[in-house]
Length: 124
Image (cartoon, rainbow, N blue to C red):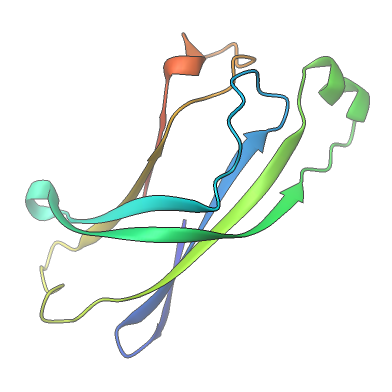
């Protein structure tokens, strides 16, 4: 995730997700992904945000044969959202974070126990 300060309390937030198109669970990139903004102090929910998909780019492998042997066909999916955060509502000194959760990982992952049931959490 990346946050860009636009002006007048507006921010553009970028998020990239990676998908294996050969994933056995059939998950595909959604046109929209939800995120939340929380206050760090007490982890208080502030608001939900909705990221919109802006691009899908295939990952370029230096060794396509090796990728195919490992059942890999990765795409990078980019999302973004522009939001306004009113200073009087977002004034906590400890700050805020953005979180996004998505289930699940590819069954081909062999260094995570039960990868198909293990979700992802992003925090910035």
